[in-house]
Image 1 (cartoon, helix red, strand yellow):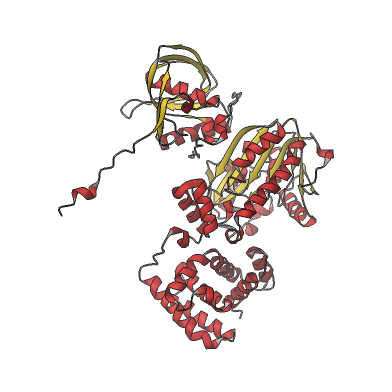
Image 2 (cartoon, each protein chain N blue to C red):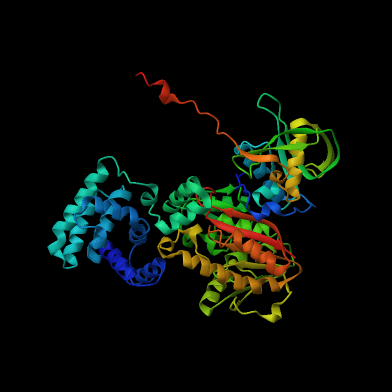
Length: 422
Length: 171
């Protein structure tokens, strides 16, 4: 039998020594355990994600009960203890005693049995502390594991009340939405179809083509395989709604992978017009192609193209240019749990600069009555409202509308969009 | 319906001119519903679309007090066609939180606008409602009341909260 906690520990060890994203390391590792049941895989993912996401809060608890600070521990010991403390605080269905025992066993299996007494003592004390009526964290930043850099950026832009809601929402389970493929079905029919598959969905004020769903696995849905819907947050759908797509348009998406917005644009044109969906590599193009195939769309073509290089054959050619650009991702830090630990202030400035270089090209593809949709899945001003003035200054395009969604304030991911017209 | 983020002074979108509405679709209706909810949630008497980031000539106004009947107005492409008299008094703006200033406006106005069915309507207003229409129509031109203030822009004193603790001092 496979020890699921051992697998989780190995993933965390590998992640801590690599530059790859946690989701990539986890996916690659779990591919080696193809025989594991879905339930075990979900547990491993939960453990690994939780230990990374809630690491600031976990280390605070460990430091409260341990004579050696978490930061000073051997990496493997720190990870074993974090895992147990995560289970104790966040996973109510596992008895604390079991989490303590498993941590001790893990230490022995990893041939650091000499420290098993220490692991035992620290995790036991953490369990006692947690049982005494919860843990009193010194502040929300630590409770919700928000790194200081990110916290300061949010506070400067949004003030204490909204910052509090943002970091809380980023630490909790994000709402899940699906996008109705309007070229194949309609919201009311899809609600019925998914209901018959056992998945409850409901409408949302954010977009009439988005449905809010409970957590479910789309891979097991026939309607998903049939291309009746896609997984996409309501914020991104609202952005495409704002672009006011009509039939028979020519639309260019300069950073399209995995193709969510480009495919939505194609769906909105109901088989007419043409969407050109570009991204920088074959690998990224493949992900777009998978979505096109599943959704059975005929009015979209993918291609490999670097958004930083101007393509004169596209000049003045598009009724709509979609520029959903690389960004700091702070709007989705609740979904991609390691983003918050990677982003520094300099990165945000560099991303702003990168986006501007891409926008320089994007605006030139807009035809004489055309529109530009600029969007980012983040909540910094540098990658949102501050780009708006830049776009107007370089292009002669004028703003029609813009919106900044904040996770925890709005019922969706943090996301910015602005629509311009020539 | 959803509450939208109100743009505050310093955001250049408040200085931009809004565009005429040519047709009402689902999105426009959704925007109007959101504006109404946002205005009520912020305890405002009026809100213009650019204040929620949309450069469309739409304003919502409700100057009625709780006892009065529904006074909600939705004005699309409003135009003030005539004015009469003067009123001088305090004004505030959801986009300039915590501030107030004295502004002189016409006492009476007549305005034409389109309602939610895109039917042309005429509004005659005086007093607070006239002031609100002028203030919101200025937003559609990218103008803020702070440029019209006579004298200084002042801080609004926060309403005094009843202090329960002080009453318990003798206990």
